Length: 111
Image (cartoon, rainbow, N blue to C red):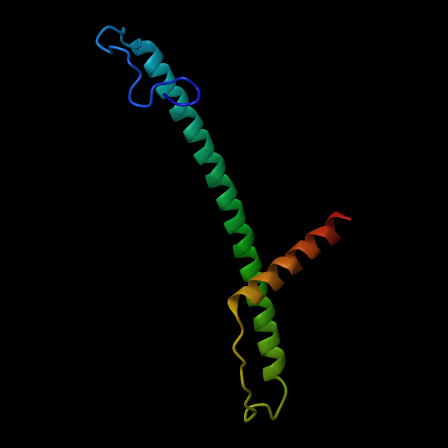
């Protein structure tokens, strides 16, 4: 026995003498589980779609800005022969900078 007085191995009850659980009750529990699971998945799907739409909009804005910058740079004569080095940047720093920019943009909009 453990500290609660319950047996460690089995309950000591003869399960052949215990009546079966009613089918209606089992079906009700199963239906409740299915309904709650579907509601959760629907909410999760909606949140994911909203986040993907926001991300898609942000990517489109970045592409537009990049195209404008490219057009401005190509209009400057003499930049065709200029070379530059790209330093490696970690993905986490880019992600953190983007997240902090987004957070600050949202706080400015809500003010």
